[in-house]
Length: 363
Image (cartoon, rainbow, N blue to C red):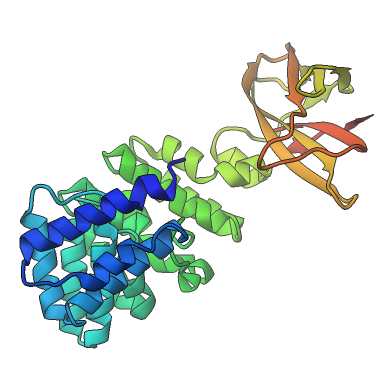
């Protein structure tokens, strides 16, 4: 993942100052320059806010002037990329401070225009938090825009858990608020738009899996060229959790299987031990079985409690009366996001919504 310096570092800050000077030479930019000198200790989103505050100080908090700057940057062929995040943020903030529906609506429109130079998904958040119904009304209109980046903005900008952005607790609490946007775009011809829709629904699935599945069921009824792939990506978290309804939507219904006890074997390596496991799966059903395979790892945490994580093993099809050998392995190298501690471990095979008895071992 790129670092904050690579995305919005000193070089981008200098480019921002140069771009602002080009479109409005009368701006002093002293506050923006000062903010640019103080980026090193800030997170990515804090850098955007700090630069935005510098820009607002330099224009005296004047919304009309800020809107003029954004319009000029939109026409400037060299103005694009991460340096425009603070510009959009300054526009949204000054529009809110102006306190009129005219400024609000105009700023929404300008962010829609600006998004093909750099996504306005972050800059639009203050407007959503200030007047959610009015902002969502505009975003619903964006779903029919000819520019795919504007259509994507409708979904991505209103995601309840958008990374690097303030959360939208009202949308998280009531997924119906953005349902018109999602239903309009789940079968969009652009993959970037569909992926945003899927990520939006996946946000909801983390706290309300039933609603995420209900949304996907609506898409199934509506049909479309891309409904299966969008649904699969939207329900990836609940699929990993073994949600029976989600699995059935995607063609993995309950199936009559005979699964042999899981065999495990440990091997040593310089980077850490690895557990290898295998089992035989017999299809006892009358028809061909579609299997979504994963394994559930139970492992101790630093305090002696138990943690659980699910890992994918892929997909299989097994003919009626047929047998498939399922194999997998897991290495216990310590990673920056996960450490392994001595103690009792267990692995269990999960097929569709059914988790089978675990096999235990010690490290």
